[in-house]
Image (cartoon, rainbow, N blue to C red; front, side):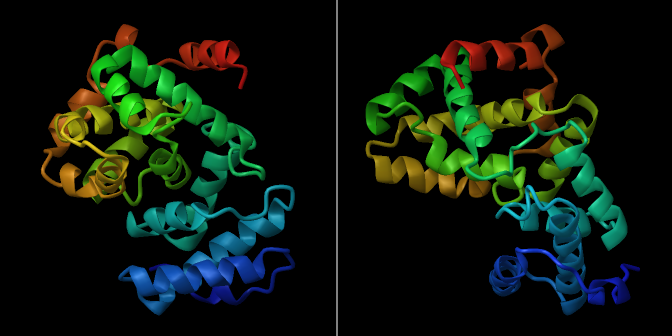
Length: 240
């Protein structure tokens, strides 16, 4: 059972109004009962209260809902949220305004796509232009840890790997999604078509077997996987 009484605990944080607005949006778009909403409020209030320098950022609500949806209670979900955000799994400052970390890592992702999926990279740069043409779609992949773009079984596979192998798993997952979407993306002739497909990539992923997805994203030899050192070198090269 998820605790409901804890959600009534008073909190003093500067993000209550923003959190409550997001709770209302989430409640109207997701199939969750009132206890889920109460648990989510407790998790987000608690985190913002304990971390005033970070506070609250959109995306945290999706991650917390994903943890609750995996069967964890509010207390365990809060503990894992803290582990992700403050325990060294995700980069320090990833959810802190002005979001420089996650914005910079969109440039890193673009470089990794160019190295591993050069045909797709060339096509997207030609159609979209700019230094980070994927960013309008992929920023949310980073900030929600794929809650909106992957079916639950696929996302839980990613999260298992994330807790074991850390942040490079996020980049490997993005690359796998893009590789699986590559045939359709190469057929897109306009920016509207590209972004429409990327923003609805879950529909593509629902037709991909979870084991096949896991093998593509994480089954390659470790020498071919995205490593923390490669991410660091790319950041250094790009100056982000």
